[in-house]
Image (cartoon, rainbow over all chains, first blue to last red; front, side):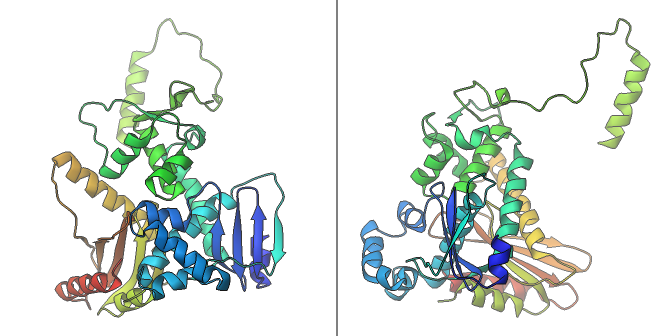
Length: 249
Length: 123
């Protein structure tokens, strides 16, 4: 549907279960999702902008759909800063808005967003990035359970280090907050938080309290039937197999 | 103050430049690209070089080096790849990625220009 709307250079809002994409002339200018912190959270939580500064910009420029522009023109943000923060928020919300869902997809022609246009991106770029992100998450750790469940830190193995960004995440992971809530508390994009949580899960540094360990999430069914115990293993064959594997790896 | 587009254009005007990208290194997404063409897919380069930066950051943490990476240089047979980590006010981790033709580029000059582009971008 997004591809078709882009082709017909549509302007309006694409409403889906997990978020909304705003298009102008077939290009994506804004996106929102309840799962992803908005530009306001990203800017104010990081301390870049006081909450009052944001509220004033919305009050004064919201009606003209030029909040982004106002933030720059009034000297609160630099041009590049606004663009980068807004693009980050758009791709973040789009990732959730475009996630596979059984719910309905609707398009309301002519609807715009009060934030205003900053830098439109092609619908194709948004789709491509969304697919890349989904694949990246699965490549890091293929169990999606850690995306929605609250996680708690596990003790690090000797010599194991987590970087400053992930230490802040671990400190906020209290077993109650879900990754989406952690993203909001830390003022970071939700996808970045999911990625960090999956990396931490892969490193064994977090677990979901509900099921004890991330490993307990339903594992793929084994492709082979269980092998009956062998009384007399062929040691020489096993050695050859090991050597061949080592030569390959 | 420059926006991302003017910064990328400046990067592309550096002598010997093949392509440049502004990359968010947590997600591996290119926020903007210029040049590249058929030989160098900058979106793939952005994601791949994110792993380079992450590996170096991890190595420094393991060594207990309490310092920051300013830039990373990768020298190929025919190209230079320069990665410049940007200092930002918010908590975005960003880097500028610049691929140069080794025969046409002046490495010292390119590093200097990239530093200047960072200062102008002011994020």
